Image 1 (cartoon, rainbow, N blue to C red):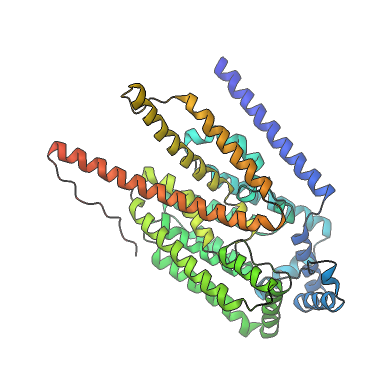
Image 2: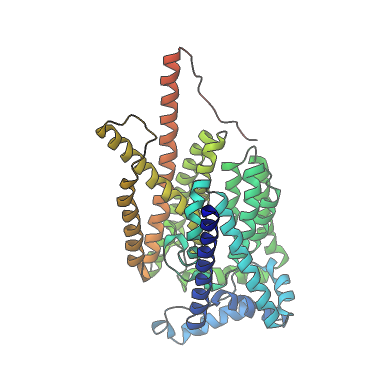
Length: 443
């Protein structure tokens, strides 16, 4: 009876948290700015429906803004449509729908996509982790990448795209069936070509996916390049709109190459070659770490659950332009990795404490030692969110992403070496010989 009461009380608390999050989001939307990306989509859809070139009109608006010298008073240029011409037929259909119907359906789709993201993150957690994670899920929307931001209110289509991709990814890592994942990534790349880097994820957590991922990457690149022949004028305007997104809006993202590009543009220096070189070096290092770690845990079902959030964080880091809505999908994985790192430190502290007081049971935990760690985690979270304001948000988020990925990968490799060492000691005592374990190769 007491357990039943606790269960219902937990559900009530979760319902209150969810209701509070929904009310907070609604208040933020009505009292502040909301739907800035969705507004760009709708204007482009209306333009296409009326037979107007959305790229040309957007570029003209940006040019007029700069010619009038308003950049000194309003540092942000008008935003224009920056998705490739292959999306324009869909915009034409959307533009023919009444605004209130299109807005309602789009809002429902975005909410569904965000719910799928949370569900996929939930699948990465262990049973014990879900006990506390469920209470944090309602707050995830307000802390993309663990830092406070209102990007959820932007109405960016990536929330829907990532929801579909992650729902398909769950099927992929549980059953090694990746067809829907490849289809979702391919469709998403029609809007955002850099999302093709997500094809690395099946290589890290799946089995024998090299050929299929390579083929899908080739198809994605072909779909992108063929647009120059099908819509030459529109494609050139699209590339110009993308260039102005960097030159005038200084919208590079939060990755190392993005931070460098922003600094170079603000200094009046060319950015194309330096940012390309930095991205190439950074992405190569991340991919090497990912592949090295994946080989050690590909056939270990227990370790794979710990590896999933780290692998996905690394996969997102391969994106050449990581934006706030890209790190939003990493909030739950980053929470899990941070918790596991803290738990590893706590376990080590308990072992030392047990040795000092004479305990010989390595599983015996002194839960009083958890209090300093909980306070330390809460203090760290408050400190980084107080520091993340304006120009400091992106550098801090970049440090968080790299730090979480690096520390998580290090802990996985450290645990792997410790496990091998324990196996060798055990084998030496029993007189057996343990052959080195190698991961199955993929084709």
